[in-house]
Amino acid sequence: MLYTPHKKQLAVHQSPSRFKVLNWGRRTGKSMFALEYVLYEAMRRQGRYWIVLPTYRQAKDIYWKQYIRTLIPQELIKENNNVDLSVTLNYIEDQANGIKHDKSKPPSTIELKGSDNADLLRGAEVNGFVFDEYAYHDPDAWKLVFEPMMLSTKGFAMFISTPNGFNHFYELYMYAQGYKKTDTGGFELVHKKGRPGWFYSHATPYDNPTISNTEIDRIKSENSPDQFAQEYMAEFKKMEGLVYKQFDRAIHVISPDKVPLTGSYVVGIDFGFTNPTAVLYVLIDYDQNWYVFDEIYERGKTINDIASIIKEKAAGKNIMTYVGDSAQAEHIANLNQQGIPCIPISKRKDSVSAGINLIQEALKPREQLSGKPKPKLYVSSTCINLIEEFEKYRYPSDDAKKNAKENPTPKDDHGLDALRYLKLFFQYELNKEEDFYDESDLFNNGFYR
Ligand SMILES: Nc1ncnc2c1ncn2[C@@H]1O[C@H](COP(=O)(O)OP(=O)(O)OP(=O)(O)O)[C@@H](O)[C@H]1O
Ligand SMILES: [Mg+2]
Image (cartoon, rainbow, N blue to C red):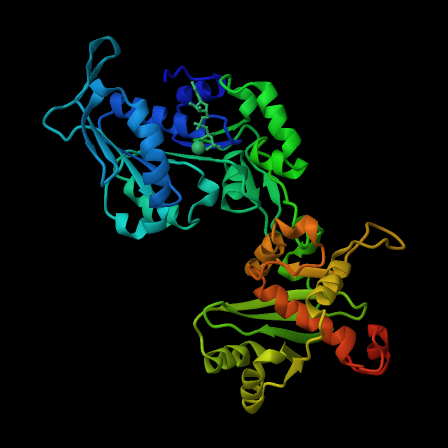
């Protein structure tokens, strides 16, 4: 297969920036380009180059066979290593382009890695990294493992991906364009001409001349608009199936100093062990606005450990009530013994969907007598785990259309469950005679103080 870079690919080859972010849709030519780019660099500057995939398996099963084995011209190859997934190149001497590799040093190599076992890779010195499908990588591996490997070599790093919701790739994509994250979780443009040292590119399969427009149009007609926009057009989308579609950082996330100082403190708890135990701290103000102002997410902790963390947080605050999952009666009894007044929320048969409805209601911005519409639920920007769950919690994708009543996938739901228990408690539990409970009555009866 002959490679002549298409326009968007050529622009990357020509960019001198050390760091590059390519937000390219499916079939745009990401993987082929990753290899061609690295091959070119390995010839130009003698050294070690890594192409990093989300997992070692992907590197081996797909990338190695489909790209490495077919795209590197035989005459350039000194040696292939099928186990390490590395190719050693011959020394290059190309007078026309002023390239002459130093034969007293190791020849250039191109190596495939998976970021799923990044820990095993520590210690190497690398001249350049290309991450393919970066939105699906372990988000911590870059800073902890890879970046330190190129400090001495002054190497380059290129992050290529299709979007995958508002995750670490989204943040990097904003960063590369010159945005800075504000403390409310929004973005502010600080480098109007793009961030110095960074190159940014957006491309779609329409930029790839080997794929016909009719073929792309066929795919478009077979996918939902959101799906097509994200996967092919490389637009960041909240995907179908998201439970809290209304959640919007610009509306619901506030800086911690915007949380009122007076109101009632209540706490929701979702117990876990391998899954995290999530504890959410909520202030309810006199207008029944809910402010989630603090969170605990702890894995692998016993209930006694959790109890001491809870006690520490409670110091100096007058917490009205703790609400926990009734399925964990032992844990609740244990907290009670330790002086933490925790009440079980009894589960109704539809408590998942009923609770979700309550949270969705609270998220909806409502018209105000004056000013902008406002929701009834806010989250402090310090509650990073909860914010992430709001943006990830979703219905099983196949069932989203078939059966709207289906419960969401039990993933990314720990803090959201804690919040749901609190909502259910205030709505239905405090006054069992009424199925619909008006919280303002509570207030008039002196429950809040
Ligand atoms: N510059 C090019 N010259 C020739 N063919 C190209 C070029 N760029 C991409 N292609 C071809 O386009 C197709 C898609 O390329 P590639 O697999 O690199 O895309 P991708 O963006 O990684 O796709 P996916 O999203 O499926 O991972 C392949 O058949 C590839 O050979
Ligand atoms: Mg690919």
